[in-house]
Amino acid sequence: MIYRVRHLTRYAYGSPVDLAAHIVHVTPRDLPGQVVRWTRLEITPAPVRRVDGADYFGNRVTWLYHEAPHTTFDVLADSEVDVAFPPPPPETATPAWEDIVATARAGGDAAWAVAEFLFDSPMCATSPEAGRYAAQCFTPGRPILAALLDLNGRIHREFRFRAGVTTLSTPVDQVLARREGVCQDFTHLMISALRWLGVPARYMSGYIRTRPPPGQQRRLGADQSHAWVAAWLGPAHGWVGLDPTNGIVVRDEHVVLGWGRDYADISPVHGLILGGGNDVLTVGVDLVPAEEWADPLP
Image (cartoon, rainbow, N blue to C red; front, side, top):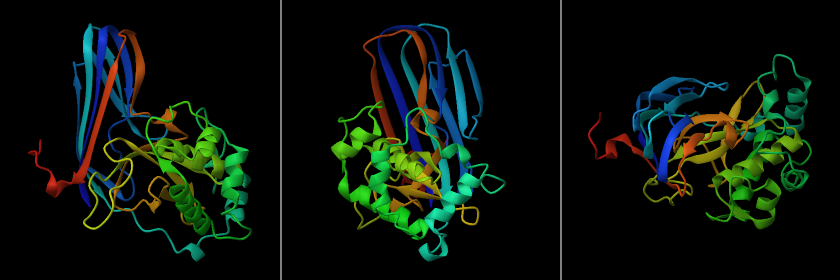
């Protein structure tokens, strides 16, 4: 599936900002199953300095510096991406989840690249309560993918998508107690639970299709940047993407921006400003099949 994705972030400041430095993650990355056909990033006002590169995880990142007073700050990312993630293996073809835990903890060549996704991170501490919640799906000897799909579906069924009831600093245990939140909350919850069990899990940032295919329900979390989980199935099968907000496996409705240990590693826009006050943030995302896009191509 070839998608056109447009992500606009706009800050309106109540008072002028004199100096600003930002780190921006809004450009999709190439990876197996995803090819970025073209992309552009427009910044208004134009920065005095711009540096494009890659972060520690290999995600595309842009550093921006402003040295003139400004009252608005716009980041417009526009891309065309070809997505065709392979289906996951049959559940019964994946190892028992205890074997995945043992392999990840043993270290060596098979697990060195996933070790950093086993431990606490600044915004996603491992939670015993979340772990016990997930443990009901991870019965002894169960294939890792069967357990993951069970947990993914359970979060989707038992938690309500509701914006405005949580913040970036809401802890996992509070999300678990409230049984409501947004995609970031459900992703952090699932990651925390998996890490407590010993299963490597990373935070995925990107987008989900704005309008569903005919006959399907609208996906939750569209029209904003989206988040989901990638869990490790072992060296033979690698990573699988799981979207607990919608209870689905990542196949052809998602576009990946990048990944990290939690939201803090892959926040779309963050930085420091001198000045400002009473800021108003507006975010809009469109992800639709390229053939349905009405605007002319750049």
